[in-house]
Length: 144
Image (cartoon, rainbow, N blue to C red; front, top):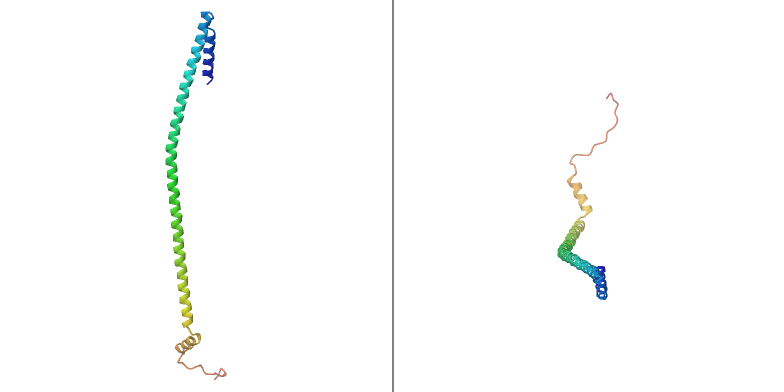
């Protein structure tokens, strides 16, 4: 931008010094041409830099799209994994609760069907010995 301003200023100076001597006019013209060349070089450099920037932006957009797509895919799969895990936990807990309920029902039924006194009588009859009870013994002296 500065090179362009300088070239414009030199061109105005050259135009205003047209009535001057040819040596001064030539010197002003050379400065104008030099400033103009610098302005053209600066403009080319700007175009080159803008082209590199645009290429970088395009590449960034292309890669960012790929990265964001991969991240979205990973997040969707993670959400499905959480959902599957939650469903499996729910099924496991439901199954466990049903097993506990079944065990409790079986225990209650077994307790309702049992009769402690009757079971004790049956045990005593089954395990009663046929042998007679030991009889009383008295002390005898050891010489007898």
